[in-house]
Image (cartoon, rainbow, N blue to C red; front, side):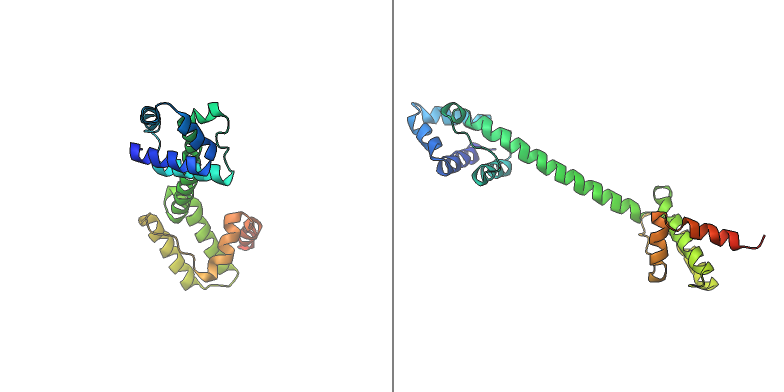
Length: 186
């Protein structure tokens, strides 16, 4: 954060919390103190400091109240801004994890063997149940081959297979799949 941004933060804090303004008015050398305080906030992102002040205003974080706490105003802002940055990092990490999970579930190959295998299993079960014919089953086999050849291509499950695909993925179709195998003449 640059000194001008830090000055804005101090102004915002002293406006929101008048005891801070009173404390600053009583300082014998405010310009020198301000320079040191600005240096203390150099590593803090301005947006995090603004959010920290907003949290103090909303009551989500405790503002400095005693004069000794106000004397440590930059450290207090840094502490709350650090929690803001941690919260943001957690959200970004969760979003990245969700994105990777989604992409993994859309990819084929070893990474996504379960989805491709479930797709084929659902097609096979639907064929055995008479929901699709052998020509459609062959077309779905071509899809499986295509999914494995181009791992970046998303797996698209046709409507006719959706319900069975979900059951296979959840593990609820295991008995139905086994009954299909058991019904095949030996």
